[in-house]
Length: 374
Image (cartoon, rainbow, N blue to C red; front, side, top):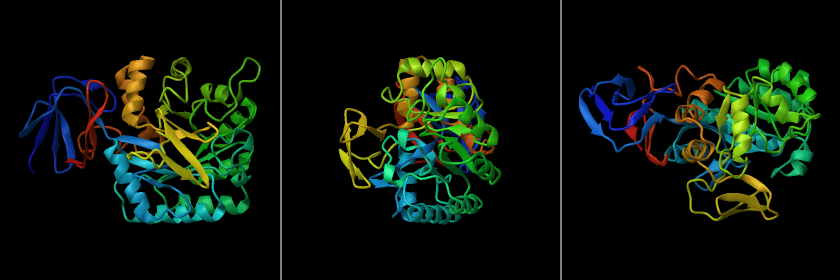
């Protein structure tokens, strides 16, 4: 096998940065980081990093995850995301009917069996949410979790590599959360107006993540810490939308200082991602793309017009986060959250050669999957 050494850029291996070294690849796998060997590819300045992992992707390439989604649609979304820097993702269905949810779960199981490149599983954001914190979700579709819903989710979790589920503690009981957690579902709290005590009870039952911290949830105040306070006081993994729109930089600094570990980046992108589209529909409602934000006609934020490389750049340039930590929030940390730290999120000997090249301004310059440039 021909050995290829990528030089000229710093290398983030998932934990730390290496300077004046080469990333050595052969046969679609990483051989190591060190002096160049074999054929040499000189890259412009910047940083090589593990392929990014996005755990909240509502669509891409003009296709939304919805009740019509099939295996081909999931493959298209994953392929588009890879070109945007996320070599692995969880396509995400926002609140929909029981029939639509079952349809998407079946499509995801088919995609997993077909080993679609980049398909890590599914994220269901709802429909078991609190209407008081619905955000862009259709309130008519929100409902408490039933025994039939629970059975469907447990069955799907056994057939998917990862199933992440956003629920509000108001719409799923601690017993249901415990059953899901024991079945392997990553239960994430979000779209909730719960008290900190109710959130803590959900964490104790088995919830271990929080969906887009700060957004669509009860906020932190002196005598009512809410879901934000409970999350910051817990060891739950917390997703962040770092686009300068969803969360103010000061709030990001506070959260990152409070939780040195466990914060991860999500794009929360819509079908518009990877296209020049200026609007789309979500159910029967228009989503407008204006000035870097996606909104419903009434101005409600509806996902984000964001990629993970841009989120990293924002954290480094605007929030002041050290680059290694920002890079880990899009690679090593999400890999650990979904239980794939042994295969994803790091550039280490024997791992698949999925990596990205970011320029000095953190813009995406190139993506490789299994050693092949996309």
